[in-house]
Image (cartoon, rainbow, N blue to C red; front, side, top):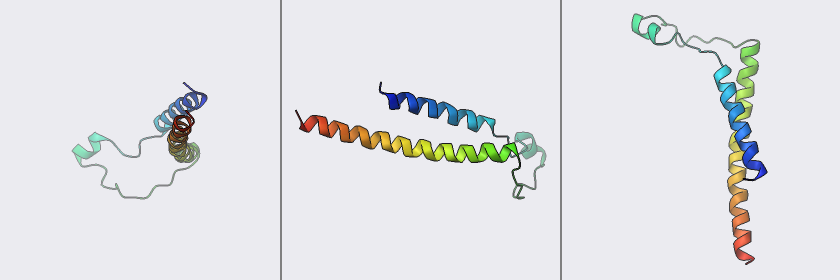
Length: 86
């Protein structure tokens, strides 16, 4: 395994933790069964730590996605370079 594999694993764990830190935005299954939660489409603003965690999750997901593409492109480029030089 190379250094970027370890970095990729660390980034994935951090992204999972950030997703788990986010609070639930709905009442859950009990609200659906009892008829509660009729205000599903009401816009609520995230404030304080919820907003920070949400922004960090978005940024982390974008970095994760870009890093995954970069690893794939660099891996293919390194394979092509090593196979042509033999």
